[in-house]
Image (cartoon, rainbow, N blue to C red; front, side):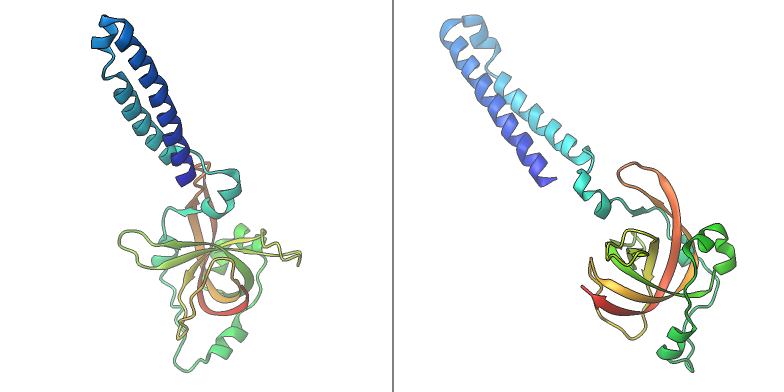
Length: 214
C-alpha cells in the first residue's frame, strides 16, 4: 500500500512539472493564459494527491498478499455465545485433556457441525494470519491451516481459532506450526477481503498448544 501511494505521488509530481512548464510558456507569450492558468498546476497536483490517496486505500490487494490478508471475521458469535461449558476442570490435568482430544474428519465437521459442537479435537496446523477482536472484543484470533499430505505446505483444512490457553503465555506468531488441543464451538462466518464473499469455517477454542516449528 505504501509503495502504491509513493508511485502515485511521483506521477502527480511529474504532472505538476509538465503543467508548470506549460504555465511558464503561456505566461511569457499569452496574456489570457497568464491570468487563467496561474492556479492550474496547483489544483491538478492537489486533485492528483487526493485521488491517489483514495485509490491506494481502495485498490485490490496484490496477488502475492491475498493469502495473508483475505480472512476477515464478520462475527464471533460461534465462539462468544456458545453455552457449552468447555473449561478444564480443576481435577483434570493438561495431559488428561490432551488425551481426551481426538482427530475428527474435516468433512464430517462441515457436513454435520451441530453433532460435533463441544467435542475435543486435536489438529496440527500453521498460523497463516493473526487477528484482533472488534471494538468491544480484546480477544486474539488466528487463521490456521493444516497439511493433509505431509508436504509441509499447510494449505488444506482451514480453522478459525480462538486463543483460550490456560497457564501458557507463549506468544503465538505468524507461520508457527502448532499441535492444537481444542474444543469445536461451531461454524464461524468470515468475509474474504479480496472478493467480499462470505463463508463458514469451523471455529475452535484452543486450550493447549505445542510449538512444532517456527
